[in-house]
Length: 485
Image (cartoon, rainbow, N blue to C red):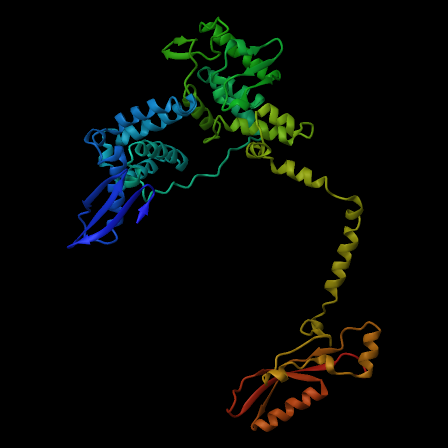
């Protein structure tokens, strides 16, 4: 058979399966060393993957590379292919891969190795999305050396949480910022979160903010470094954000930030030493934020949730249009706006209340009275009876199919026709069921024909079978509901 750019044949010699395939014009006949017919195709794929590496079997040099060495070669190639933020993301993901599998040779990785790694990371309480990112980087490394087929043949990504963030209530917001302002060691976390909750600026945008990007007189902030090119924007500062930015400006000046190219939040090198020419790391105020959220009872709240919070507040305001929200948040589609917006239940309730029609609501008492009168009509003596009309009504019969087609509409009494012309629809009431036993089939059939002819009742249940005696039949008679019928 032919697969891709090479041909392969799987056959059995003696009690062992062999594979015969060609890759780039070179033929390979190899023993798979297994008598299992189901195991042979998997081993054949491994041999083909090894042969695809540089047109021959896996070189010893590549097979003896450790995960750490292979990751370094991979990242060198990725620098020229992707953005710096992607390289930084993959570098961070590889830290955990190196910690667990760093000294393992890539040639000795197996599906069990990958499964054990995933199980360990889940045991550490890591989310499925984070594990998928780490295994994704490992997959790309192994693909570079044509080894992923033998390791990840049965790999399936973990399910990821659909939790897209949260918005704070006014009480929670006040509690958060009151607690943040209570301790000096939480100053940076307090000021950054205050700016984020009033401008929609994300953490990465505030970390890369420079002194030249802030104009305190005009109360504006220029975001130059964002998640993508659409996030480059100018944000106005309200009174709260302007005050917090002024506090950050004074702090940066005290830490040695003087030049316009210096960062608003200098990097802490060690102790009280700061480098204003370098931005802070992604974990600059992570510890302070975790302690802060736990103190005010908001454990699990992320700094990025404040961006969800501010967009939700803007979406709830009737004075702010969607275009204005998208311009402030740096969104390019309404789908992304809906991803970040969490309109609260109270805002939804007010919006639905605006749909009330005064003309319709004025009819509600009248409709309520009609419903109550309908309930009073159901008296106890009428509760077990049903009114049955003559039009297209059919009850089941235990006889032949031709007899089962009997309908009550065939009863053409003069009174019924006259009442029907006057608009009446109910002519009979169903009485409680009665049971009658017939010893002879002829008597049973005669009774059934009489009922059909008179039209005052039909059999509803026959508990006997053909050829058995006695025959028991259950009747529900339909008595006239109109006088004179």
